[in-house]
Length: 332
Image (cartoon, rainbow, N blue to C red; front, side, top):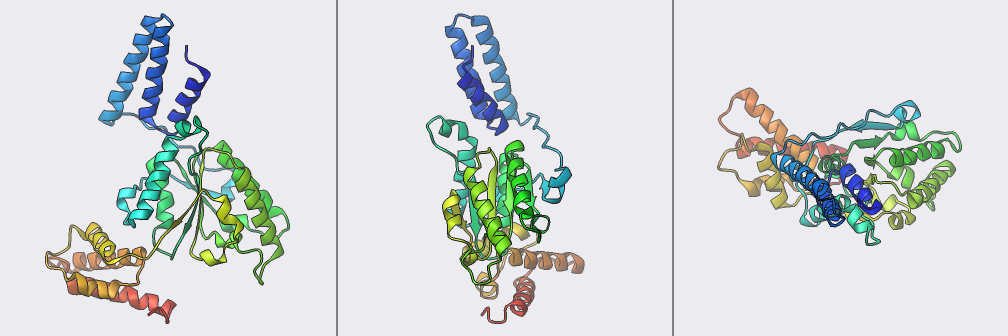
């Protein structure tokens, strides 16, 4: 018969959708059964494992339906979605991509790591300028791991009443234990600001203390992501509580070219002046570059032009640059 450790590994691999490990554990159980003298049952188990493996390779395995929406008090604290985004859709620095791939790999092999006294990285702090992929990362991790994405609604979390915000935060951390998923705290500086700052508010300080305590004690199978555009505002104690800090930067010239080619591959002309375009685009975020590409594509469709030219794309980029300059006149 299967040992308790094998049953545990089987269930955990099923929950994490790690099909290869699920089949591997099933075959281990079949081997143990054969050694115990029950050859008939061992053969049935091997046959079933082979059928599962064939279904996985043929892409016909039915995926579990994610959980329903949060109810009760949690309905005002969490919004849920079921993303299909993948890392392959993102244009990232190699270091950032490698870190995210390692997070995915460790999570899928969490039972293997835990059997050696190790823990997968589950608590991530995402830092960098707006529009550079932090929010998309939360969607991509959920999509890659086939998990629901829970966005924490700060407007429902933070209240003016003493102790109420911490109580709501406690509900969210309880939900992480009860419902496995990716829990995303966007604009995290709203609750993670430095407690020693001069404009510190007493209630927010208590909320941060509660968050640090909950994060320290949290032992669920969920992933916890917090994102901020203002790393300098965060309290120093936060960095010790997260398993890793992932930094996002504005696109490089090569990343800009890759992003445009991915976004406009159906419309782009063959003769594109990349140097001229980069001179205009330098300083824009991934999100602004994507919007400029969409602007150029819409103009192409509406005007029924043959292809998107360098001039048309440059015009769209200039529009986005001017819009950004209105927000930050000293940007350049």
